[in-house]
Amino acid sequence: MSKAHKHALTQLRQAEQAVGEWIDVIRETAEARTGSTAPEVLITDALYGQALELFDALWDAVQAFSAQAWLIDRQAGVRP
Image (cartoon, rainbow, N blue to C red; front, side, top):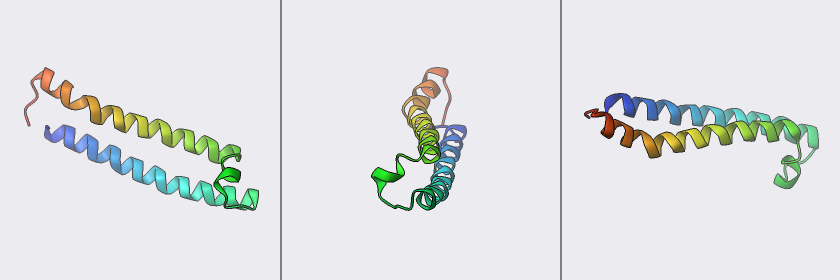
């Protein structure tokens, strides 16, 4: 794994952590709006749902990078 690859993966994982913290804030506002902490109630909150969709998109991107970047590095002749 190249230095740039490691750096990119680290940054993506840090972004995932930061967005996870943001999701917690949005969940708290959803709890206030719905008056509930039950997951089955919170998931019906439109804003919380939108925030979860954004997190899912980021998670998918991190997984895709993790799965494919090493192969691209290798095929491109990038050295560790």
